[in-house]
Amino acid sequence: MSDSQRRALRQLWNQYGLELSDGLVDLQEQFAKDQPVTIEIGFGMGDSLLEMATSDSTRNFIGIEVHKPGIGHLLREAKERELTNLRVYANDSIEVLGHCIPGASVECLQMFFPDPWPKKRHHKRRLINVKFLDLILPRLQLGGVLHIATDWEPYAEEITALLHQHDGFRFADIPWRPKTKYELRGMKLGHKVTDVAVQKI
Ligand SMILES: C[S@@+](CC[C@H](N)C(=O)[O-])C[C@H]1O[C@@H](n2cnc3c(N)ncnc32)[C@H](O)[C@@H]1O
Figure 1 (tube, rainbow, N blue to C red):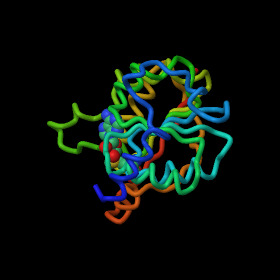
Figure 2 (tube, rainbow, N blue to C red; figure 1 turned 45 degrees about the horizontal axis):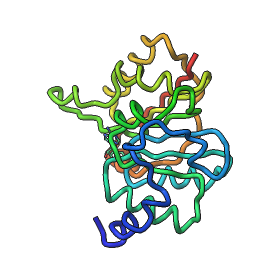
Figure 3 (cartoon, protein in one colour; figure 1 turned 180 degrees about the vertical axis):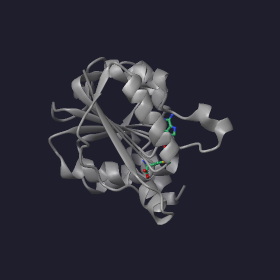
């Protein structure tokens, strides 16, 4: 972690951070304005989340990430841009969804380039599985969107199949999103990028 990322974490956490230990929160109370909430899981260095929060002040954004340098980078940039529609959890998303996010409170949940864990013996570490979809579904509003992107084709096929089999979702138009850091790296390696979006029914 760079010095400036460490400093941002120390100085800006009170302003932008949300605590797992606070348990279930009223999401709207965390923001200056009462407006639809987008959650991004695994934002990495956070540049795409920052771009979305900066370009759309009519939505509130919550990032969930465990990678401390990325969180420090996001906080520093959020302060620089004087964002009031962005908050962050520095915890495992399974814990945050399970303990902190109320039912029917999220309009969009996005996961851009979740770790693909390409080796077969590591597949069980993949975040997206039936249990995870069952955790997300009740937290989405009716008609709320789950948007996933990956550059690992076998994972894209697995995710698409899981969503087809799940009776809580129907396939939807792909929302706009910025390109992410991990995506650009994958594209340089010739990887094909797949976006999938579903709506809660
Ligand atoms: C491959 S990176 C992609 C980062 C970013 N979305 C991008 O496209 O540049 C996956 C990210 O997910 C985060 N992550 C993995 N498991 C997580 C979990 N259970 N909860 C929150 N974040 C997680 C990792 O720390 C990592 O930053």
